[in-house]
Length: 353
Image (cartoon, rainbow, N blue to C red; front, side):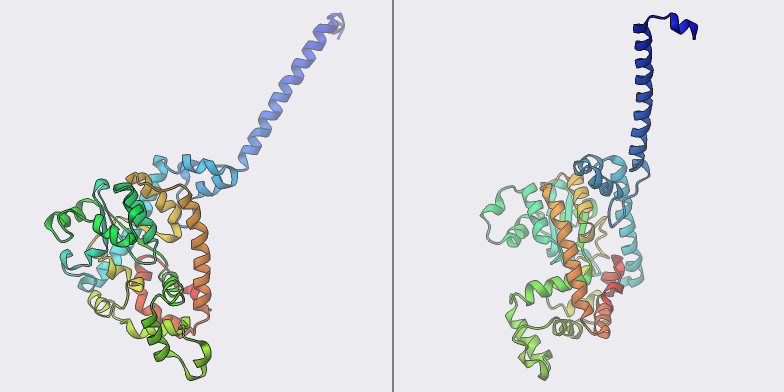
């Protein structure tokens, strides 16, 4: 202590400030560590789920712009590949169980007109109606044939003319491309799709002839005052009566009434064309991002955010429509679409009261 008293006051003051400064550095460094630990992110351990990529969720909570930098990393792309492999393996399992009933026999006999080729990116995509086909044909056309759709009044017709192999869909060259190119199929919950078709095609009077047929065939006498639009229950009764319970491709195709509710596995010949990328509307953000990066497609970034809210509200509306039906009727429709449920890992539970 005597030695300290002998030191000049300026030196003591300077030493005291340095000690305080060092303590402050240690304190804030420790505090910063604690704050960072609230949101621990170990990128190497994150496995993307079919519902939400954890890294995407945490990025949205902390900084939404972080998502665009983290998602395309090699680790996450490899993890998405695992998701697609698992989806393809599930389809293969049920195709194996179906045997010859799940096959058209040969590719040239399958509905190849539902396929869209983008030869410049070596990909083939199967279009299932009411599963975002209008959006995806725009992405493919804007990538391979920019500007063509601007002068078109019929996008689907234009896309069908352009997005095909130059040698024809059934040519040996096209069949060979189906073996070599990446093959993509787009699906969604089968009942959400049927509910969407009802709202868009039936409720909006886009099929007047079918509407009249359903009302005249399924309207009960006590419900004659309900107008000329079929109720959802009447529409479902029509589907049950016109869709065979047999799972064979031949039976489904022979009773096909409209592409907007035709079965995925029959429409896309899924047991004959082995799709290595199965994209779902329920995971459209992850799947769109993956496909965009893998094939360098022209897709606006805003697309991912727009789809998310739409899918959620559409699914809720579908659940409500089905919960208003008699349970036996819902189960009868499920039996007729069960392969689409089983192959793509969808369940019936939420549609039953």
